[in-house]
Image 1: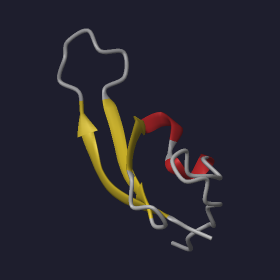
Image 2: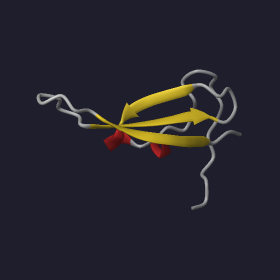
Image 3: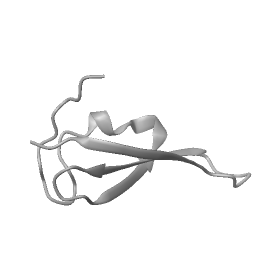
Length: 60
């Protein structure tokens, strides 16, 4: 099983952008970076879209 390694949050500075924050994380299995709209959070993704590794919950 793999985990998401959160990297950083990007702020979109375009005046007409409908999503102003983006989250970046990488898969602990394949080390591929992914960026999604911040409102979705990587915790909702149960599999890596690149390698298909199942994600496990990380205790805070």
